[in-house]
Image (cartoon, rainbow, N blue to C red; front, top):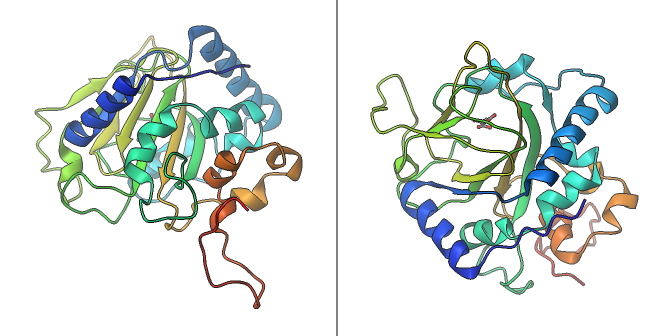
Length: 274
Ligand SMILES: O=C(O)CCC(=O)C(=O)O
């Protein structure tokens, strides 16, 4: 599969402005329909053939309700297509403008110095109540963690789609039963659309209406390099997969901020490409 996924400078700027003000933005048709259909079929194949349809370890907290949904955690482990999809493409330039550490120094700022934190497939069979995806939440539009949903099929208000409260990423609290939901927006996605949003944007997913089926979404979290990694992709992925990666891809999966186990190693946690 060849995913070119380029965005113009203007469009990157617009998505960044939307995210800054509303907490989210949607890249329409980010993956073309034919590739979205291929990825959707690949998702089924990975879930059924490689994972035997079995359930993965559930999250804790409000999101544990999804424990029985079809989920493939760390789908990049099962497929180079998904590995390349999430570590290349211009969506990274949108994330980069929020998550790059501008003082990193050892890698040119035109490249990512942030990291992929998680990369899961889920069919949205169970509605998730309003929540945010991190515990450290402060006022204002700055962030250290961002989400993404790439729809591999129609994913909308009728079948487990995303809904959000625009602007809620700027408050420091957590959603509760008292949260004002009057400004909620349904983020209806077509196959290949990608929603990018702050991890602190109040968001939820809808129940599946009778007559509709839940569909696959690729759920992504990217975080600044200095956060505790959610998964250790450097040890998880086999060398046959990682040997082929570019330097920028390696940064995204954690190669340039590994804590050393050698007592004689440099105390510097950041490294460049060398
Ligand atoms: O499955 C989805 O569409 C969204 C899941 C979600 O809300 C989350 O990962 O925080």
